[in-house]
Image (cartoon, rainbow, N blue to C red):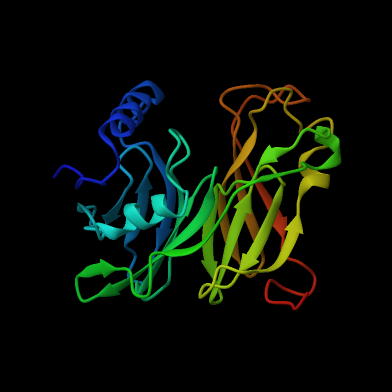
Length: 246
């Protein structure tokens, strides 16, 4: 069936829908997670919604609480076109779901499953922050908006991809507070791997015990060595593990 009404203003919904058509898919999926039963959870930026796909391939839109978008916008998120939902993580039991808002302001939203519905318990907004930050030195000294592009759940922690900082940060699933960050700028920004334009953004993240998978959306542009294909990087886990104390 059609996605439920997100609660976003009509103008933003229409711009997102048109953008999705141009990009080749009206749903404009921006994040993927799964639970221990094999259900896939896919977040749609165009519809500010979540589609659950069963192992058999049946799909249904989750009914998210009306308060989700309202509280997110009250915290300064979801006000800018093309800066909406950008990542999703679900715990193995499908009891908790986190959704990342991309930028201006970026943040994390949290939902809890109650029987067959998803609700905000104690508030939908886990954290929100605005402002700019300096990129890695190789990219110059022009500040960039703080942003999130993906979120993953592993070993009872959240791992969030920060594309403009070229790093992955571990955060508390209960508060969203940063616990530790790991930079991949040194490897990603070599002359061969760097993109001349502001494409090549790290857009996808998966964490396991052995390391991190990071997907790069290069929009068809060539990087320094001429490679034009989309790239997935595989980084080894830190020597002291993902759960190490700072």
